[in-house]
Length: 182
Image (tube, rainbow, N blue to C red; front, side):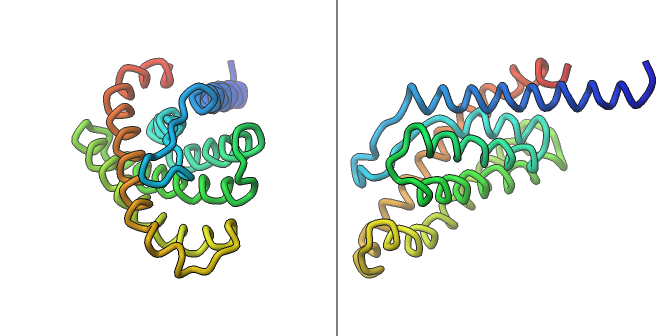
């Protein structure tokens, strides 16, 4: 097999595996969603687990690509928030996978994975507070001042969601990575 065919085959396998991770993410969203008790407009779902696994296996750009595809499909099939929800999902998960993926890409160790996931969780939380301050009033057609009391719950929700998804990713990734790198 010549080098060109090998590169094409490798790219095709990577794309197929990314598609599989995307499908798993969509199935997880379809099956597991819980409203956040402090702010029921926010829902926990485990979709970011397979997206983060994709970012660790194939890099942050692959994780971002999976994020966009999942956000659009999820937004069209399961969400009532329309384009606002899609944008918020891309911002939240995009920051999570880019930060974590960039850190993990440099040092592929358990310690680096843990640091990457904590940094991604903190980055997602830090970005989603101002994102909710800006975007939520547009969606609900309310003044920004009405959103301010919600922001502590938004921060707690993002810490919880990314924290749970990070813990599961940390537990599963090394077990799954062997298959993804074959």
